[in-house]
Amino acid sequence: MKEVGAQLKRLIDAAAPYWAGEAEVFRSYWNWEKRSRESDRRWLALQCSKEIWGSGLAPLDKGIFLGPAEELVAAFPRIDIELDRHAVLDIAEGLRAEFAHYCAFADAHDALALPGEPRLNPHAVKTAWKEDLELSALRFAHKKENAKLGDRATRFTEGGYCTLFSEGMKLKASKKGPHAHANALIAEACAQVYEDEFGHMLKGIIGLEADGLAAADWSRLQRMAIEQLRARIHMRNAQFGSPLAGAALERALAGRCDPIVFDYGKARLAA
Ligand SMILES: [Fe+2]
Ligand SMILES: [Fe+2]
Image (cartoon, rainbow, N blue to C red; front, side, top):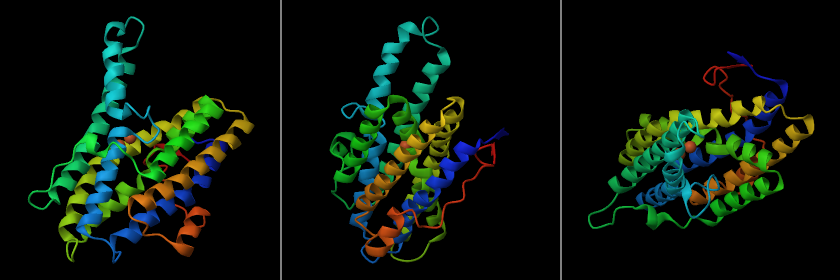
């Protein structure tokens, strides 16, 4: 196990209440009186938009399918000449994983359709929602401010500690009630995505220590990460139709939720 440095631990501790704030959105939504088949289809479609178009993880017009697909085509003549085979495999695996996530959520979305309702496709979900565009814009602004730190912050905040997927997986237990069918579909989709996304988040976290950042960089990185995590709470709340409001929303945005306990064991890190 790799020992976690004090700086990284501080960053994780600072992020943990905001991860919890994001989780609070989903927990409030699952049993919300305004939840319906339509609202489930809406958030699932918006999730598909993220899995294909990437929310600032890639150029907006290419997203995380076309972006890596074009990179692979461009890489082919250079494999093992200028470009290591494993770097190319990484691109291919990223493409496969994100498209698999798209498929998982699109399948759940389509399974909730009434007869005659159209199937989802990537082009129908190209337009992201306002708060998701704001998250993308913030990530691009951070990269512009400082390319390395902005990219690190973006990778650190990717997936928001996977709380959508971990909270969604818990729905497996709710087999009764008006949302039983949807709950089973959502739990299944989230289970398919969870391990991959935990891995993506770890890549973003573990790389941080190898960089040998100066103390001032760590505090800048933390500021960027917290700004992005707050933007994620707005993005998730809007995605789910605003189940968090008033004091509960303020608490989440202020980082006053009980922090998520970071699983150092799963991350194969020693705290
Ligand atoms: Fe994904
Ligand atoms: Fe991912």
